[in-house]
Image (cartoon, rainbow, N blue to C red):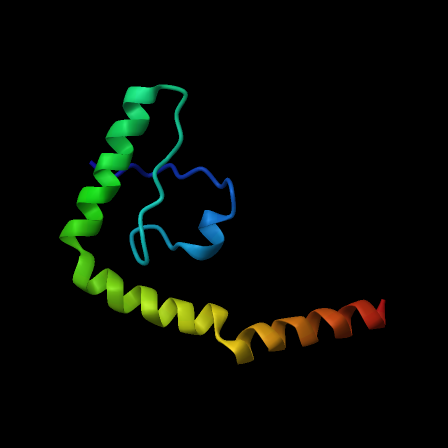
Amino acid sequence: MILDRVVNAGGQPDIIDHLSTGYLAPWSDNRKENALRIAEGILWGINNRNSVIQTMQQSVIEKFAENTVAEKYIRLFRKLLNQ
């Protein structure tokens, strides 16, 4: 069972696209539920490893390539200078 609710905590959703480049296990106060959700994510990763590897590689290139990061900083600096 893949759970629909994903908690936005710790910055992981900025890096991982749930069920595309990885699995974000929803948080619960119940330890058993957390363990089951993590196990679910591991099984999902194993069952989808080939497509996930390709998708992850492309995502990293798009989000974290030197040119991409540099451009984001340039836009930020220009925005700050114009304020």
